Image (tube, rainbow, N blue to C red; front, side):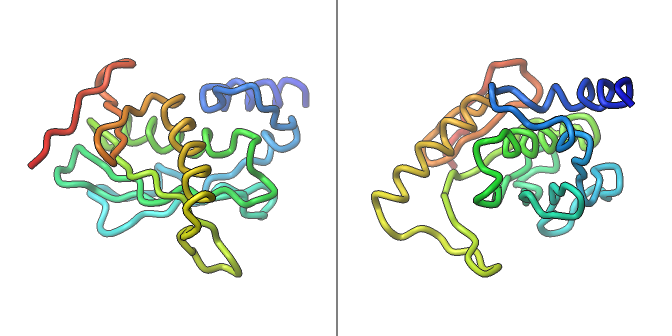
Length: 171
């Protein structure tokens, strides 16, 4: 059992880049639905990948093709309130970016860091300016730590260059 946990931890270690601690039992039970290998490319519409532990939804990320078949747009990243600050957002973002690079041969991932909350299963954007700004700073810090760079209101990650992002050119 210890070897099994070590193997799972080693596989997921590349998705955890912070000092947050996720318990060994949580790591063992992480489940992505659907798995990336189950997706069909090119993607039609918006794709949603959920992160679950023992069938409990921890969070999700949605993305779609953007402009070219080599650029993708992260629409939303959501982590349930009681699961925040434990590294699950990092796991989801890295899972999608790594797999888009390997499976879809993506060049870039682009996003607009707009915070929202889910209330009673309904996504609601934050209208309180102070709350919005506070959460947006936290979101931007997370994405910056994961290799995204800011350009205007967009953030993006160049998947073809290691730690070197190119700027999005205005149309």
